[in-house]
Figure 1: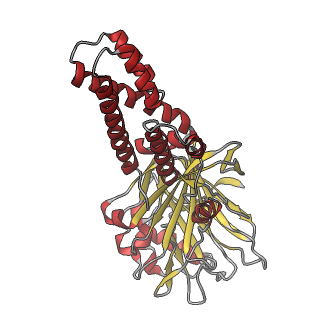
Figure 2: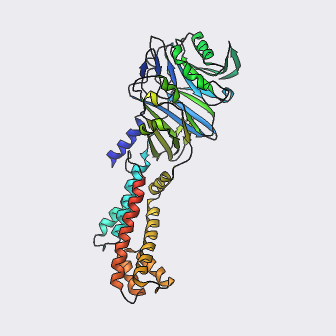
Length: 425
């Protein structure tokens, strides 16, 4: 059990960022563009997975893009398109990023519904081994491892307006409004940043009143930069993640991992459907990260992993805040397994009694007798036998045997139906 729990935690913790190249420009797997001159590129640590975090809180999306600037060229620049008017966008430079871990909801639910199935089936066997029943009920609910400074609007030159300028943790970040991609290129090169002009046209689709840009680069006057991430905050009705800028590059690309607070529904378009995996997780412990997310109790989160090639990044990713029905069901099983088991016991007992009575007695039994048979059948096969003795005048043995067979068959059918709805990556 401990080993499997460690595996689950590892799936969430191992979320780091990586690099891939195209000529003299580089693409970030976060879906945003990183441009660079010949001297270097943004470095993303030692791991091969790139990570970002999203939280939609009271109509404001908070997007964190992690980075490691230890070996980054000082003339490189990170550009993030944001689907909001620049006056409504704020940014921050972070000295750390969230660390989130938990168990896979569907994997644990598959285990718990199997435990519930076993407990229900045991009710149809004479309890000669009460220890086994006790042990089974104790296992229900075990959570196996399923295993993540504002200033005045300043027009700069032609076509660029700076809405926020921030210097922190050895980096500079600005929120910009741009009238054209050429204006953006001229502004960045005017800052002394070596930008490959071929990397700029990808931003043309974002040049309109409903988009802005967050640009950041290493502060040339700082010798010891400590920034670990960029936080963008902007109004949103559904979550946004910029994938499309990465389509300008060739090669295999890098794995992209997006951790979203809450159980959500990403709108995965056809080009990346086969290379995108969505895992729903839950942390039993609270978590707090300033200006991003705070929870004193357990909380849900979603991990979206994208293995798509750059050529498949033809659209940006939008994420609905709605929770899939199967995840609601899985989490109910995990949080309230005994209650879920009792509900199934009542439903399966009622079906078994009604079907058995209908086959053997047609319309001979009154509702009172059916109710008594139902109540007694909830107390194992012994209860079924006692109920038949008290309520039935004939065919008692046939009733007990047929009821037990039906109960077992319905239990297995219900178990398989629920079990099969949960994905097992």
